[in-house]
Every structure is written in structure tokens, then in C-alpha cells.
Image (tube, rainbow, N blue to C red):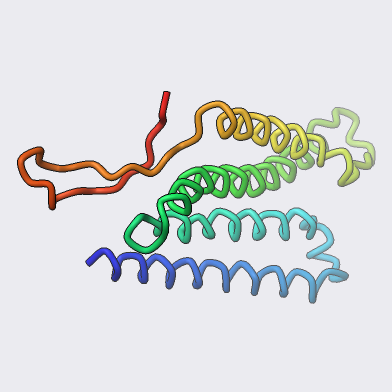
Length: 168
């Protein structure tokens, strides 16, 4: 049963990644189109890239001491929050930057033409990315997740489950 769940996760991950890559390809192909330029194609690519990073965490979630070494399971435990968090921040900050840019345009009281460059809206991405990276790095260095196999029933040593846990 567990093996079929892992395979189903990989299939879903492949579907998500294939769609994200197709959208990146479509965006790159139509990059010079007026509508795509107005849609801020760099942020569209960032959004798809974040989705790819997030979905790749399915691979690390499927690693345990049955199909890998205990050391690999430990690394997978800590890689999962990195992939999910960094992928989410990449996608979220792309959306946030797009909305922030639109907000700056519509909050202009004089309704004069203003220029909001992509460099202006990359600041929130860099701030969010840096804070997230620092938090994850601190967590990884101070108290990383470790893979541990636990008994479900103390009287039966054959019924166990694996989980990621903190040491401290």
C-alpha cells in the first residue's frame, strides 16, 4: 500500500512539473507579446518555478529507512521543509510583487503615468527569500529534523512507523 501511495505521489508530481514547465515554455515563447509583457513574464516564470520546487518535496517525503539508508532519511527529513518553504516563498513573493506593482499604479492619486520597474518589485521577493533562508538555515544548524522509527504498540515490535522528529 505504501509503495503505491509513493508512486501516486510521483505521478502527481510529474503532472504538476510538466504543467509548470509547459507554462514556462509558453511564457518564454510569447515573451514579446504585448499581453504577456503586461503580465510581467518574469514573475510568471517565478511562479511556475516555485511550484516546481514545492512539488519536488514529494520525492523527499517518500524517502524512509525501508528504501534508503538512515542517513538519507535524515537528510530527506530536513530537505522537505526547505523545498516546500522555498518553493512557496518563490511563488508567493511573485504573486505579492505583481499585486504590489498593481497597487502602486492604482494608488497614484494624480493618475499620472508612473513607472514601476521589475527591480522595484523584486525587493519584497529578496526580503522574503532572505528571511526564509535565514530561518531555515538556523533551524537546520541548531535542531535539524531526524528520521526515527517508532513502535505503534509497545508489546508488538513488528508494528512500527517512521517519522521526522526534533532532537531537542
